[in-house]
Length: 351
Picture 1 (cartoon, rainbow, N blue to C red):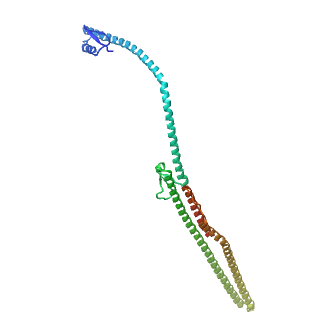
Picture 2 (picture 1 turned 90 degrees about the vertical axis):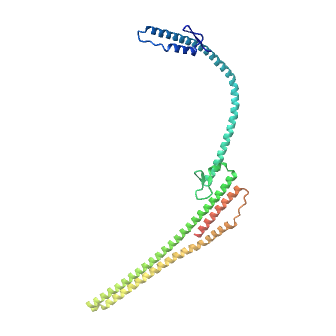
């Protein structure tokens, strides 16, 4: 509803409300009014009368507005009550439809979650196999072996999209690379073992030669010392004899006797030394003989070990596998057997 005000003989009368045109008339008529100081009584009266007109109009408009608002509030409450009644009637219907829709949504979500769980388990099983069975590690976005193996990288993204058959083909190639690396490491270990044995043998030979040279040097030193002792003894005896001849020719016979005794003692010492060296030589030869006998005693076992290794290489029958998984397992067993046979031959060779 719109409110209209009419201006009749300078007064505003309220019909329903105040139109903008009436307010414009007020503004045009009253805004120019001014009071020229405290002595302008006419001007004060005009301003006061104009304000009363505006105030009375405002009060009437506010009163009318309040009446209209009260009606509006009553209408609003009635509308709200009817709204609640209608909504209350519709709520069971909507709740039923929501329950039906939610049941289907929940079932779909459960199916999606179960599929996601299975897919996560499938991918994790592949990761576990790469990490635990083949020792691979994740570097960036690729799984790699712990040694240089060109072409053996498995992208993480590929694990999610490749088929089981493709993944098994990857695993076969990875196992072949591991087997090749194991054989390479075995050859390195064998070469290191052979070199160690060679160095041990050389060291033993050098030690034996050192001991032999030391014994020869010691024998020469002992012999030299013995001859020097004999020479000195003879010189001492001659000097003593000369002195005795000078002092008393009567003692010539005793001097000769003393010289002969000294010579005999020197000869006796030399004989004892010769016997001692012969005994040491005999003991050394006996030790060498015992070592040779022990080595000869081990020879049949050594031959039996070599024969057993050749038998494993030539006569062992492996059953045929009907599945690719079985073939992979049998291949791993064959490779492990090769390593065991090689270790057996190495240790038999060192026997």
